[in-house]
Image (cartoon, rainbow, N blue to C red; front, side):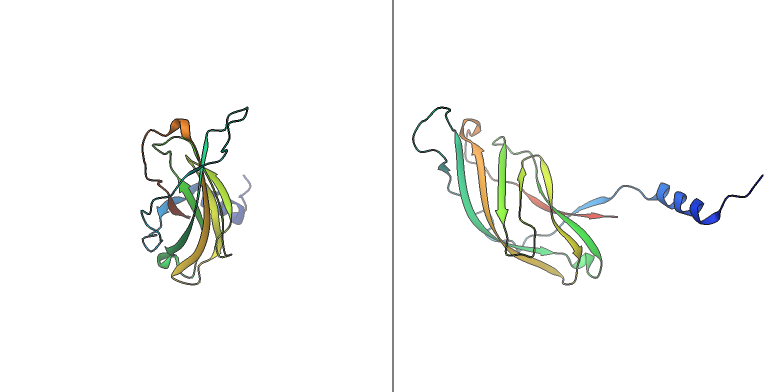
Length: 152
């Protein structure tokens, strides 16, 4: 029986033992405005066919993520919007450049940062636009979101 090469075998064993990435919620308690109401407006003011029942609101959010636990490492940060009480929600945002601009729907997450963590805080300003279907809104509700780090 011929011996197996050691390096490829070790690589296969290491890959087999590398478990799935662990997701950690990032402390974003420094993010403002915190619990500030968002004023929503009808996307379509005059009734036309097809009827557009979308409410839209825009706000500015100062994001401050405590990434100190990952300092001097590389990381991937995601914005996660869980399913909301008010039903389907779509959000889009622009940034000042530290985080990635993007869009998301409730029940999903999207990448907002990938790279080296060189400071204990990542800060940016987001211009956030939310869209919800007015037919699904029964009452005032909080919009829940969180930032997550995937650990390898």
